[in-house]
Image (cartoon, rainbow, N blue to C red; front, side, top):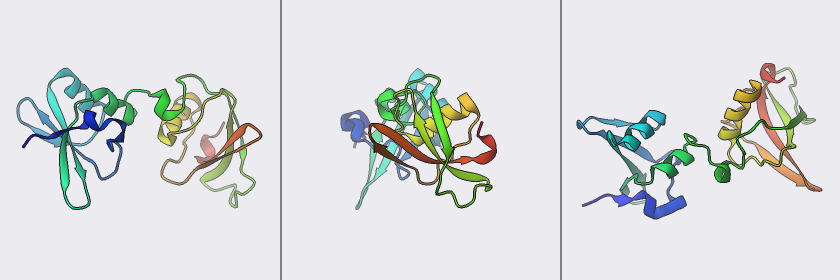
Amino acid sequence: MQPRSAAAAGRDFPYTSPTTCYIEVSDDGTVSHGTDSGTYERALSGKSRLFAVWPGQWSSHLFVVDDLDEYARAHGIVHDQDRTGLVAHEHLVRWKVSPYEAKPNASYIGIELELDCDCTIEDLKAFAGQMRDQRGWDVATSGGWGRSTRQGHTTYSLRVRRKSLT
């Protein structure tokens, strides 16, 4: 039985689902698991093959990851503006402490943020990485975040390590 093609599923393949397990088989037969840029580089160079197990309700299915570019875009190894909503540039950001923040001296605080550069935040981890690189911010990615749009302006609600804000 041959593994299914992840590319055939297109963008419906759950590349970033926490239940998708990746298995890397190197050309010498070594088996490892996980996702990182090294896995991508080895598979891209032909030094290994990458497989994914997608658990279903009643059974799991084995896929060969045969669209490495889509894998890299999904995992943020390669920037994908369509997926993240973010252009790879210095963002024009306005922010303030949220008026709903009950503990403004806590380690992490809620902020309200607007992007004046016409980007949108579709992928919080991608935005957090860009803000870490651009401004040194430590944006929380494990909790909730939100957005609201009023009169053509989109405001994002995020949590950020207070001491990292500049």
